[in-house]
Length: 172
Figure 1 (spheres, rainbow, N blue to C red):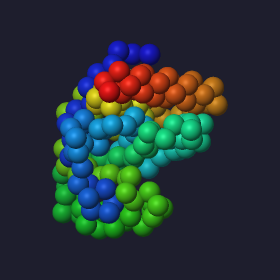
Figure 2 (figure 1 turned 90 degrees about the vertical axis):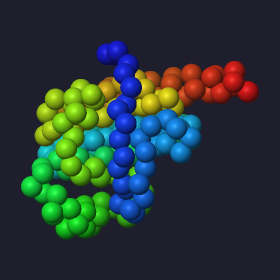
Figure 3 (figure 1 turned 180 degrees about the horizontal axis):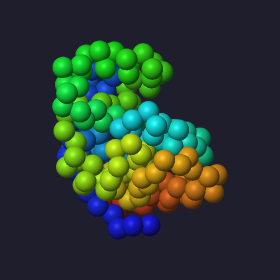
Figure 4 (figure 1 turned 180 degrees about the vertical axis):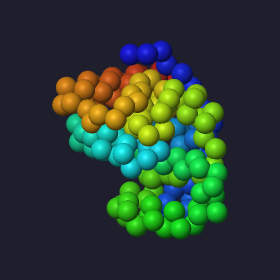
């Protein structure tokens, strides 16, 4: 596993139109819960991201404090004027029950991708972010995960949850 790093500050809106701060502040997306994040910059990345998120979510159903979110980066400056039709298209393609956990960021994201160590916008990106906004694990690929890889990340999720629970008990 590579060294942990801080998730860069980001504001994005979900498909319900609710804006969220992606940080560990009291009302931030990472506050008080472990987050499994899948990020796509293109449709080509969806099978990889879905494989990780769906597999780990199924394997860790007993971890109630973990949230799963998806982020779509729409970077092309020329597409800015197409934001409304693109948003409508994304809403139509995402199951309604995921709208509150599916976020879109329109605009330049080169610095964000660089900070996340996401070298290629056509590949999928999945990361595990702890309650402090620290990326504890990440993968950047076009290949869906194997069962062994999903099991390994699921074990890390359970371990991170145990660490977080221990911190909470200590803080009380």
